[in-house]
Length: 182
Image (tube, rainbow, N blue to C red; front, side, top):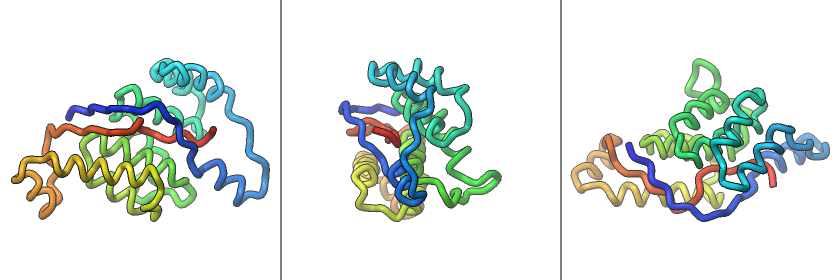
């Protein structure tokens, strides 16, 4: 599976920090020091360097999300998908954790799609129940574009049977991943 991304340099804030602050009625907590160090590298597009800072920074969901975004942007979508699978899904299950924010789910969906698993991406996106979120719209459009790029027999097999063709090319028209901080 080849993952080709065409990117635009934008960072879109997500709904996790705002949602947490809104529901918990407390001020937003300062960024983890490891994220602060990694952010300097991220701004320089040094995603592997940032990932190296974050990989041992703990199991905090914000740290793990930032690490997953770095993995995707560095072309390591398989590592990103495995990371998100470990903290978006309940252990030993295919069910999502109840308190995981939708940005993390969209990032998981993006990583799955980049790994050639559009059915998994669609399933995760549906569970967010936010089809009008800008990133969800972009991801749905990318999946639709991928579908249109398939040869007719593979497209038919995908539409009728949900069979994902091996070695199909995935292309994103946006920079993968959402950080949950500004």
